[in-house]
Amino acid sequence: QVQLVESGGGLVQAGGSLRLSCAASGRGLTMAWFRQAPGKERDFVARINWSGGITYYGDSVKGRFTISRDNAKNTVYLQMNNLKPEDTAVYYCAADGSGSSRSGYRYWGQGTQVTVSS
Image (tube, rainbow, N blue to C red; front, side, top):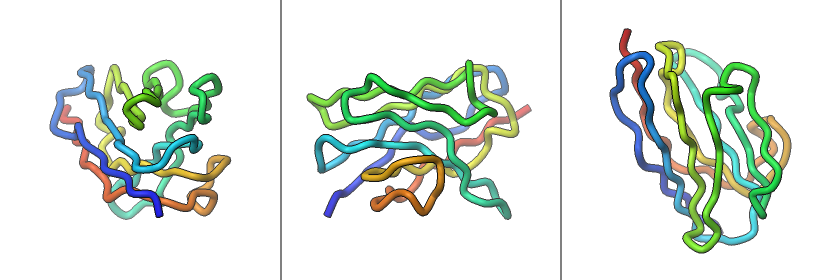
């Protein structure tokens, strides 16, 4: 069983930045971020392989968000820049999976709220 704990969410104005963190109890796993806005599906944001050498982003965040990891700390980060109101959502960390589908990941965190005001 892998436990994931997200942190770093909050309220920010449009154009601002936030960094989310996800501390994992397991090692060597592909990790990903998803987000879910009220009344919408949980959408893929970004993923990173176990070494950190391969990353992939959803179209809506390319060029603004960066996923990275520190394997010494078992932590994955999501740096979010130039935030927009449409980025408002609960952000979830996921682990042990592949691809861009919610069903592709075995473990999930509890989520952290990100709110972007205009």
